[in-house]
Image 1 (cartoon, rainbow, N blue to C red):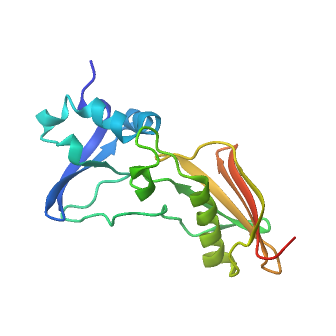
Image 2 (image 1 turned 30 degrees about the vertical axis):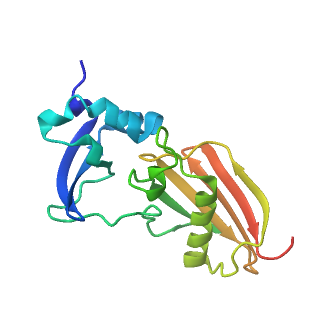
Length: 190
């Protein structure tokens, strides 16, 4: 028989705009449940055990780390925390994890959280602007493929290359050796 600790490693309660909110840190099994069944499946799995722990599951948020006592996470998060990039050949790379609390997971999708491809391309473009001088934005897409879904609670590696003229951006996103997404964006016709 399961219990709350099979899915929730820790939790805390805080006032969020005058209402109680529960921040729930998933176990490995809880993270897998969230990725496969979304918030609705996670909530249904903990519902029988939550009242005994004083948790109101309908007011919960799955998070990647519990906030410090008295602190409140900034909501909504629109992208992961990206560490300083590492030089990788002629480009740069970021190793990062997708947090459970991204705003997009509120509606994309309630039963299986997936980072949309357009958001992945947006992260690549923003990071290239911040770290590589990509100032043009995207006017042409010459390649954009999404091969595997990107989900919360997992680690990825995003590699960016900007052309010497600064008019072309190429990116690839991997989970270990698996290519999840790749793109080639241009600010002028190829």
